[in-house]
Image 1 (spheres, rainbow, N blue to C red):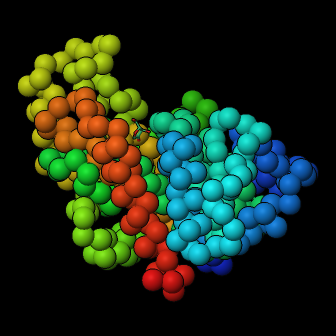
Image 2: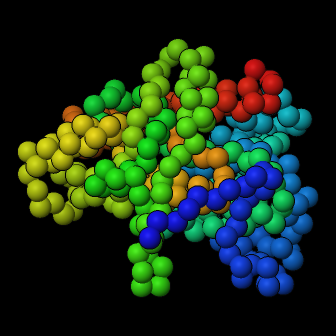
Length: 304
Ligand code: R2B
Ligand code: URA
């Protein structure tokens, strides 16, 4: 069974859970927020852009960067972690931009997205665009290249995400917003110091064996088999590999959120497995998707 995408004609987030209405309180446990303990509409009602990424420090840096770019009052340096009461995720707000970490892998981002989307629903947010800004392994592309995901695919190069619900497998579409992809590519034309391209992104359940690496604690395949698989992925249009895009696309799509995935490639997987670039180089690479998204947000707000 394939589920249908959400339709949010009024711009509101579409939660598809009949049980929520009968709950007198909703505790967003992993975010340390709740409908009785916090005034979510006041705290978050003006959010229009949600940016998510794996690392808490990177998402703090992004919020500080956006604070400056949007010319907001005060020192962006003292932005507070809204989820400070938990060390599962961190969350920062800079005007209409919410910046949240999601940890590594499908289960981690999935928990965060359930609670984030309920938060946007309780806060009555409208017309929210959500973007994952992350890192990835490139396929046949230079390290430092930024990939805007066209289609998020699984390890079989299929545009699907399989969610086990009770003891059923439910197949969900991983379609992303095509217009958003073009809008982001247009924004990338303003930036000349790194290449940006559109390609398919493969999402895996593991960094080592799951991404065909030879350098994990376990490996049962040869270099030839690895390269044969990665080349087939390349021929299927895959240009980068990461660990969250399919579930991100599936959940956001079902809830009527316009979503995009923008990841920088830290290495070219056809040339190796280990990430050996110096720390400063990796830090600069990770700022590239942030730079692109800042132009996108400023253009949307009429500030660019
Ligand atoms: C990219 O980087 C992480 C693994 O190093 C993972 O979260 C991902 O998708
Ligand atoms: N993140 C991944 O998931 N894979 C890589 O190779 C690099 C970053």
